[in-house]
Image (cartoon, rainbow, N blue to C red; front, side, top):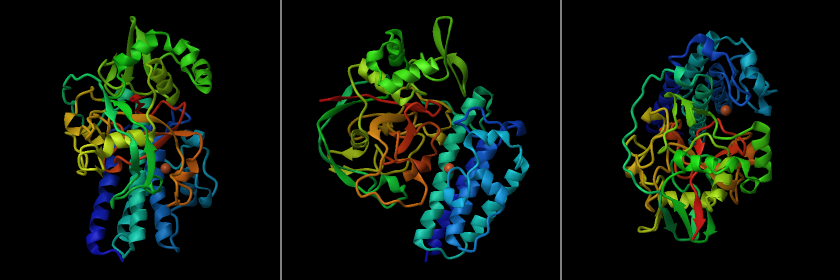
Length: 432
Ligand SMILES: [Fe+2]
């Protein structure tokens, strides 16, 4: 049985997570909650309800006699879990005015109370892991909600908190040499992680180089101006199809005005900042740029070793700077409240042992690795991450929309190769 000492931090984590969801939607108008601006986005009302519904799923695993709040709510809020009925069509989440926004908030409160009650009972260590998974799942949706708010409102969104990013120290984006050999990748600590970060396993790496920073907007503009989007030889065949089909000529949200690239984001419409990491690029664009630059994308093992391996002590750490949790001094995550990327060089305190910077926060970084289970993978929760082991690439490191508690060096995110609405960029690798 979990002791009260174990349950108190769990209750605190749950409460903090629920409060953060409410904070993100606090300034929205009622009309904002209902609409869905793209088939890949979801209405804010759906996120608020769905994260609560997953807590219900968890409670149903804790107590076999658990009764769901409402079949109507379950049907609307189920994303893809066939064991709980037929999920509502994702592209139609914005076509339902019922449950209403008020009803969803009543539901949110009811589930918060139910889970708090459940956490006053004795639960086993395994059960507490399920509750923790529900909190981490809610964090994932907080980030998805931020992507959707950018898509729906951009600068019309009024964050409850907003801070200015630190000023950058101007440093060159030097490729850093990293020695190869056997590296044990994956999560090797006691803190929470997803099943897909396990088990730790050995991989062999050749010597390689990884850039100090992610590719910046000014780097990327050179690729555009050199005809990158018009030159077939840089592109994967599928990527070239996407460029033609979608008439891509720049990252998502970019528009050319008065001969200058502008972007619209939470700060408004303005010329792109040349020193910030490029954001809102697909895997195809990251891969094409890398070929144009005479480089390549790193594998996720290369990314992780550069982020977490301490050559001097021969140890792997949870984060680039060591094992202490993320802070606003070390990286740009959601609780930094910058609502955008920080320029390269803004976080020297967050450098990895190898010297790479901004590996945590700012933009998720595309890797060349296919999203699949590690050797010896065992599913930790039926119908979750491993349902997506096909047709996706791994991204590492978190973004300015990622809550601090949900990122670590071993975290594996994944998206389809043509998705662009998330905060994704990349850094380049080279053979040594
Ligand atoms: Fe979900």
